Length: 413
Image (tube, rainbow, N blue to C red; front, top):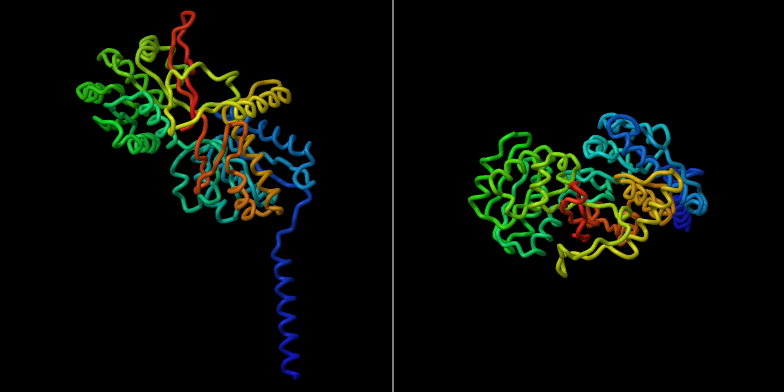
């Protein structure tokens, strides 16, 4: 009998000790909820970084005006990395070790995320970057701690393929810059187009050359009805100048986001080539769109995309109006995705019910499904990358004696 009682006492003690251990393991809950923000407030990217910080601040103010998260106020703690990846890692470290931050909006640049990612994984800190687009991040062992509200570079490949298919091009030459970016976009496009079109050549080139006539001769000899070009600004200038002299303005070119740059239109022969031969795609900010552009001039067939209209544009314009009222200027690049990052984190914290990065990360998977935000509808894939986003098809027109980029269609790849 005594043995049975002793056993019961021991069992009760074990249960009590387990409960106490769980209570000790639970992290102390702060009086206010800190959200870190690592941006470039100084340095070459300061213009972008300051507006990004403003957008995060706008989201925090709106959350606090609505009684915070479960009655707790949110505090934004911004750190400047001056556009340097090592300074970005140190900024994250200060937020974590000095201020006790467990969730961070940012870092902004791909190399800053790569520099800070291992530390975030080691400390259990959650990143939501509004601007990192490199596909390489998803392959890192620490990538489970990184979500991204911007669209990945590889999605450009799908967008390019959608437009090729929509316009019934049958013989396609793929010309790409031999970098991680160029390879990722071109390989995605190639995979999407295989068995749908005849890819007459798949040709890489080195960036920064002045002479691309060898590559252009190869393309001309293949007689494509579309050249799919993934490159950088400086390469595009040289390619289009030489392409004009070789008569390649008679072939339709479909190009990636980097050709959308006012510098291209300042060079007459390049601008003329683009007006004659080039259409392009790029991720776009819905808040810039007063109404859907006329179209569909460059249609996307059923099953390959959907129109980004209605409630998405309304949400984007509401954000832009709120930003302008608060700061007296219009938003900038990555402002909408930053605003969405903070709002999604707030929803995830509320759902988790605790300021714990693991639980907030789990909740973010749930709230980040078909979330309609300032940057359109956000759904995270299994790697924490945004699955889709609004893209614009554009062309160059000569209006009032000036060359201008003109949007001709919106779609979601």
